[in-house]
Amino acid sequence: MAIKDLSEILQTHPFVNDLTEQHLQTLISCVTNVRFSEGTYIFHEGEEADKFYLIRAGRVALEIHAGKKGIIRVQTIGPGEVLGWSWLISPYRWHYDACVVEDVRALTFDGKCLRTKCETDHNFGYEMLKRFSQVLEQNLKATRMQLLDIYGS
Amino acid sequence: MVHNIDPMIPIPAHIRRVNWETEDTFTLLLEPECGNNNKFQFLPGQFNMLYAFGIGESAISISSDPFKKNTISHTIHRLGIVTNSLSQLKHGDTIGLRGPFGSGWPVENAKGMDVCIVAGGIGLAPLRPVIYSILRSRKKYRKIFLLYGARSPLDLLYRAELEQWGKFPDIHVLITADHGDSSWKGNVGVVTKLFSYIKLDGFRTTAMICGPEIMMKFTLQELQQYGVPPNQIFISMERNMKCGIGLCGHCQCGPKFVCKDGPVFPLPQVSHLLDKKEI
Image 1 (cartoon, rainbow over the protein chains, first blue to last red):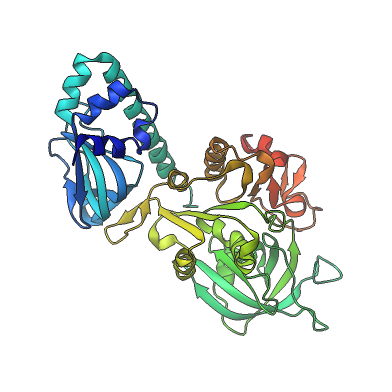
Image 2 (cartoon, rainbow over the protein chains, first blue to last red):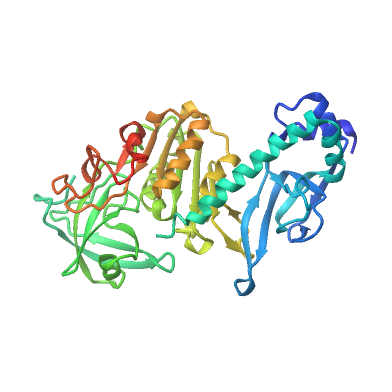
């Protein structure tokens, strides 16, 4: 797919809202368009986290193996959302398995490539950090609500 | 309209069916004896006091179609002595019923608007009559969103109906569970997460919310982000109701009696109470 087409696709994703043209171009230099079929795994716990994904369509479930309880799905990620933040934080390892529950179309970004760009262009790095902090904050809020088990009593 | 001259005296209501929705939640289909060929009339959002003879009363929202007046249904979470006793009833048994009591959802005032219904857990039960009412006059409303969250896929109420409503092209049904196993293909996460999958026109939206107060609190934050004006947001409060007519004070919440002034309130009437401890 041509870079121009990828640029148009990328700009429809909320993650890049209000990103400058220069930073968009930096992101585009590390992007690939991908598809995953239902039932496949995008990554597994413990593997090297060298990518992140902007989901355009479909749904991915984050799974954890909980011994005798079997597989538990703790979060799903759908259109307009971001899959994966471990590429940004050492030791760059996935913490969950990511199973496709509905055919996925996504943009994937090379984490190593982006980390290098973050180190060389601190403005870009700060922009990435701000955006991923939001992802982390939303995940933390959601996790706290899940922990409260609000429907349980 | 209370179906008795004295609202403190129950009328007999006969059990016509018991449906188990989940492991601990069931729906009673009742045929009340209204007398003189009267039909049981209620507003979506109202509740009845159900009396298990010799055990006690419990306030339970009406969860059936308000246009079906021969029978009414109540979806009940088996939690205490009264609800446990109600859970053991069978076809043909009789209970006492007082009601309907309280205020209803603004089904009429929402005509011409988008409607965003947000329910958590058993909170879907008092909102189900709203959905029935809207579906009967579908063209009088704009977009309809139903966002529903439960603890797990096994705790979802009315699964067959949810599936059916989800197939209608003009109603957006989004469901999520706090966690699921590998057989669950739906969303996993809290109900507020579902807001990221819809687009609301804030000024033209009427929102109706029912669920645990903490869920409603976070839902309000999402609605504020969409710019839904507070007077277009309605919530159903839950308190320990006893008399149903604002006399005993058990359900007092600040200056309001939930049984008489609520359970459905416009947000501006109760927003200052939501964050108060021990109210």
